[in-house]
Amino acid sequence: MDPIARMARSHTKWLLLSLLCGLAFAKPAHAGQLGPVWTCSTAQFGLIVRTNALQGNRCKVASFSPFARLFFFTMQDRNGIASNKCAVPVSMATNFVQINKNVQIVGVNNGAAILLNDQSNIATSGSTWFFCAPASTAGSILQKNVNVQVVGVNNGFLLMKSDQSNVAVDSGNAASIVQVNVNVQVVGVNNGTAILTNTQSNTAA
Image 1 (spheres, one colour):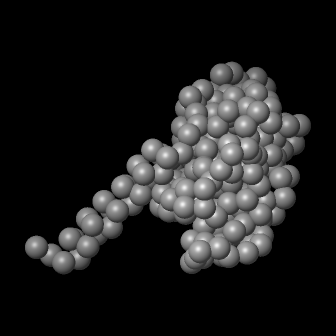
Image 2: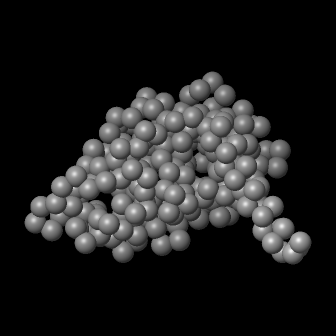
């Protein structure tokens, strides 16, 4: 068998197992239990869940964008209380800081970098949800919505938080936003503005 093909298949299986492991140990986030929102790639998520479990902490899934291959999640400490700290493997720390806005490394513990989030993107509202959007759509989304903010940027995608049930976007941008998110749909169009809503079962609510 071709050794390159065998190695690629092995790597794919490892990523899938890592992701499934992460989903098994992570629980959906709910209002009243949420801290700052973190973002990572699907390839990183299983490792982050495992690293935090070893520290006694738990990741809680808030949302997921399969096209952008990104997870949004919050953290709880060993007592189930919302936490503004997250542990990641040291080798992953620099990349993790780049993806997440206003996050800094505050220490190292048992081979894990401990990161602190300043809580500027804390999720508290029952209507809070998270979505990805192409960076080129940022200006129009922020102009059209009072309660939407950028919580991070990764590979040309904005990582955004909305504290309202619906988000208004230019109708020309609606399809690209719907494409990169799970269960985000257009519920109306008026004068060139499309209204998006999120029907994800794992939305913070």
